[in-house]
Length: 140
Image (cartoon, rainbow, N blue to C red):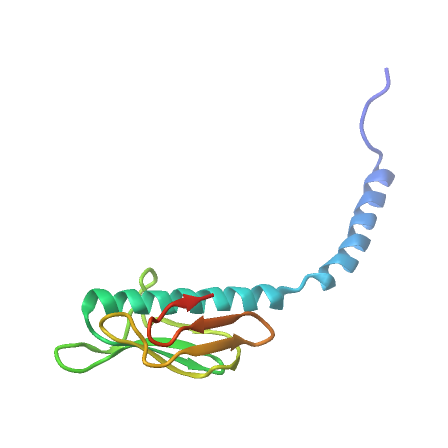
């Protein structure tokens, strides 16, 4: 009766082949592309959250966009809070880190969720997030 299975030589050969394939496949993985997409999605969700908070509270909310990320804060004013807006799930200040190549500035949502001016925020070598003037509609 012959035992079924692999010999040690066959196992070592398979491991060497897997190692060679991995050496060629790993450098082709473009992690930066995933990070850009993730940052654009996070920015879009932050803008939408800021708009919802402005509508429900009746207070203005600012989304400040810099070349290296964004932050969300209350605009302050009469009977309205000021300071950083807390993240809805993680707590702490609501902010994100990523590269913005165009569109740095501040988007302010009034108590009705509208914006005075629009914005086209271009994530570096990635997608564009658009906020329409007036309505505050967010494409992203």
